[in-house]
Amino acid sequence: MFIIGITGGTGSGKTTLVNNIINSFPKKEIIVISQDSYYNKTDSLNLEERKSINFDHPDAIDFNLLVNHVQALKDGKVIKQPTYSFIQHNRTSEIESIQPKKIIIVEGILIFYDKRLLDLFDLKIFIDVPADERLIRRINRDTKERGRDLLEVTERYNSTLKPMHNLFIKPTKIFADLIIPNSIPNIKALDVLKLIIRQKL
Image (cartoon, helix red, strand yellow):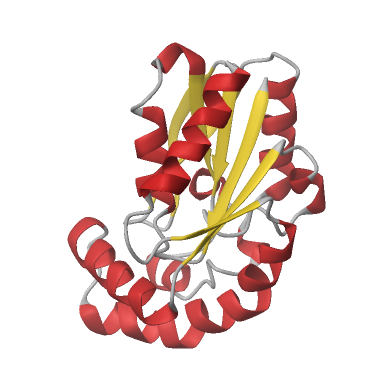
């Protein structure tokens, strides 16, 4: 089993990179665990209170559960992964059974923050993209896919995303084994990553 951690700021292209990887290999060989599935439960809060949560702070993530699940997969066990709704800002009642596979990709903006999780990765990748480009990508994604309006996205970026990136995400770049500039499609880096995975398979 080979576990890859892929991180970078919001809008850096993590999902695009992951999709390129998983579409290049048999589904029976590779799985993806997203940090987004492990936001803490917010059942005790109403929707407006949930919207005010700083989701880019490490305290918003249930790292204990995430670490336990990655370790369980490494040990060959099936996990029951929670499902998260970005519309309701809360976990749903749905649970997904995830089987261990030869290649496990863990992706998310804060996955290098927790040392327990960091130590489980065999390969650590940081996607590095300029802040202005990441903001444009975030606006496009959140307005089209997550029901946000432009004002909400830009206000959240200035109040939480940008400062949290500088505090908790950018500093973890030093832990990366591979740093991928991704302001343009980085075909060579993707090819190198695919080669590494093929060798492990």
